[in-house]
Image 1 (tube, rainbow, N blue to C red):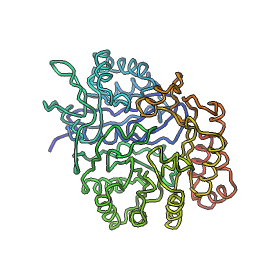
Image 2: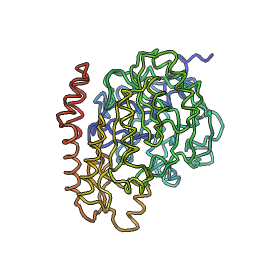
Image 3: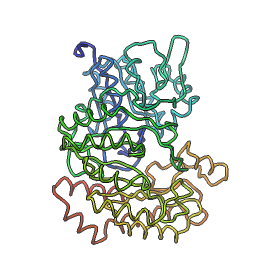
Image 4: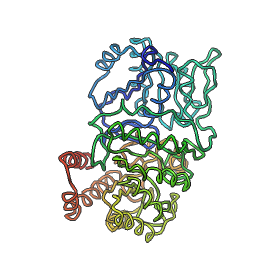
Amino acid sequence: MTDHTHCGRWVLLDPPCGQGYARRASLREKADAPEAPFPSIDLILLSGAVREAGFTPVYLDAQIRLWGWPRLIQEMRAIRPKGVISLLSSARIDEEMAQLRVLKESLAAAVYVVGSIHLVLDSLRVRQLMEAHDWLSGVVLNTAENNFSQVIAGGNAAPHNVALRRDNGIHAPEASATYGEGLHMPMPQHAIFKDRRYFFPQSKRKPVTCTQMSFGCPYRCEFCLDNALYRKMRYRRTDDVVAELEEIDRLGFREVYFKDLTFGLNKRITAEVLERLSGPRLRLRWLCTTRVDVATPRLLRLMKNAGCYGIEFGVESGLRHRRAANGKPIDDDEIRTVFHNCRRLGIETTAFVMIGFEDETEAEIRTTIEFITSLRADYASYNVVNALPGTPLAERAREEGFLRVDETDHTFHRSNLLHKHLTPDRLEALRAGAVRSFYRRPSTALLRLWRMKSFFELAKLVRLSRAAI
């Protein structure tokens, strides 16, 4: 057995930002609005690789600690790590790379970055980034089939999920390789991510953490980039997932968020995991994201019995033709039925909504708002359509001439599209009005008060309501 106490430390870093949190499903982005802070799934998954390589993982979230770069470097000097794996924001690459270079020179440690999806999908940009920063050890392209332990342990294997420097130059493989079921994923070291300052928007209890059972998404929503990272669905071993959740429960976590893009797609694997979780009756409760047309009555019952308390659904629009154009040809009645089934089982629901498609009218948006209200969801997340770099929508908007040249808004409050019928200011006002109308309904307020069981829930809802509007 490896003696980890003498092998040194590797720091998993969420660097300073000062702009708050906005978490995406796979690789993280930072944004300009404070959202629910919770640990990065990428760093959680990589923590297992660090441990497997024989090192001690140390997690530092400079944002939750309110540290600037000078304070962070001071703290890092005391740790004296062998290496650093830092998240990297695509919106602030130059700024963060300059600071990471200072950190590198101060510590004389290896530095790797976890890039945004838009970055890692472009092998040329990855190579250019490494050429421009010759001090950078490598770029983590994805966290599935996690062989990063071979990299930091000094192995000679050619990893397909890390771009790194070799004696003969830069090794920059394609970001998406082909894996099947049962991919290797070292046990994440959740203990180092235990911080009671973290919570999810729907949280009832703390502390919280994240996990992931599957990687990939077979659907091709035009405004989404997350589904491009893994072209084929991959699943972790059932035994590993169950063992990890039992360990999370043993460590005293009370909630976990499955970061799967679409939970439950593989019915056989999902049923096996859920049936095994129903047995030990863990104290742990969890939530996830899935599609309405995946959430069958049988799956919902299995999820509830296994500890699920909340599900996020991408409803997107109250108009079927809008949903169909974005990969979700789902009837209104089917959506209403699934939300009704969740209420009957006592599973809370969140409706994700997109408003401001390039030719959408204000009347259509108001139809969507009325439809979302009719679903009686517990939460609603209204987002203005943005053409994120690298998405099919961005490519089409550029080709057809309705892409604005100003910076993309990763908070999804303001549009970067040139609309036929609405201005960006009007769209932003409609979004804010939709949020207010949903959360200020008397029935919603009374339900919140009736369900509230702690001061934490009250403080969380106040914070989120301020951030949302």
